Image 1 (tube, rainbow, N blue to C red):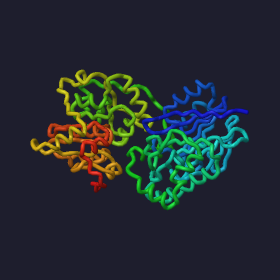
Image 2 (cartoon, one colour):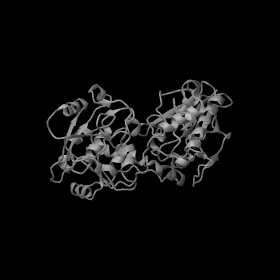
Image 3 (tube, rainbow, N blue to C red):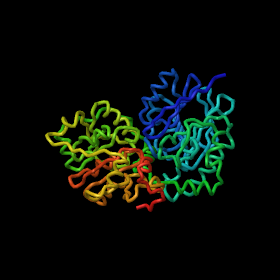
Image 4 (cartoon, rainbow, N blue to C red):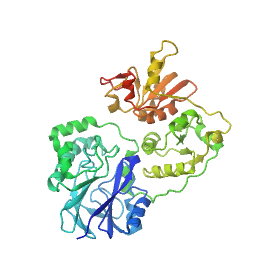
Length: 461
């Protein structure tokens, strides 16, 4: 009898996964990211032909590669029938079944993350279901968030999510593997997830939609919802219109004089280097968004949609990697990029710098009786702030800072977050002649160790 194999294609920067399932000859790809070369390379290495591409829903956190992948491989393109896609595809609805070689795929309507959301239960021939591709419904110890369609739909979708997960758990074998798209750091997860793999049976014991009554589940999920990245507003419409073919070519080179002109014009010029290297020396007016796991989320959240964006990297490889990350969320038209040391790119100007410290350093500074007043800024989200904060700190979540910079006074400003990453972005935005900025580059739990934390819930400001 043929075997079912599945392969995971990770996108850690977005907290998402795509999947390739195969019987050894042909393959089904589910929820592919836009940079489809990774999928094609995997299929080539396995020696299988991609016969079908399927989406569980119209994604709100990334641009899909499904349309291009299906076209490039002459595969059937399966989409929920009521997703509103404006390009040729094969619509699917609850209870539909289709074959991909020896794989039998059954569509299960699972509204909650979106109204049109579906899951795909996959078996070999007439055997039992071995895997279920759950998209943003059943996650590992959680469920997908329900507020991305619009606030007027959130209550109803939350109730629907509860019933969708219960439907999956009731109808599928306990040993069926659960393969969600979201839940690995994605803002599409309603609450934090747990684990790297799971089965339906394990979820019956741990998933809140299966261990809580409906009203408790709804109340807890709704209470936990906080802000999500601003770029999400553009993903759903783009996926319904049909994304353009991906372009991973290098952006236009920008020389030091043009860099300075762009900074002076108030454009976003983003330095990809390590955040401590940025603190040690950077172009005045540039912004630090270190190329790493969180890079694309905060670029998409902070840079106004469609605004000119220029990158600075130490190497061409950094620019190439950043380009790949950005096309995943539809940031295609980069204004350009510059490669080199800060000294080479400074165009004769003196680079700026600021201090990097830790929570112990902040405690020492606050404990002193001399020197100017110290302003402490907390750049974390509201849900993080509500569990504890540095006593006396002012709260401006990083995604609100561009519009609230005037609230931060001149003088000495120490800025912290949960790990140092967002604090680096904030520090770069606050670094002006009128401020002495200090970046606290340490995980937040060290604040308690340093005796700085006020653990009681804080009033959100």
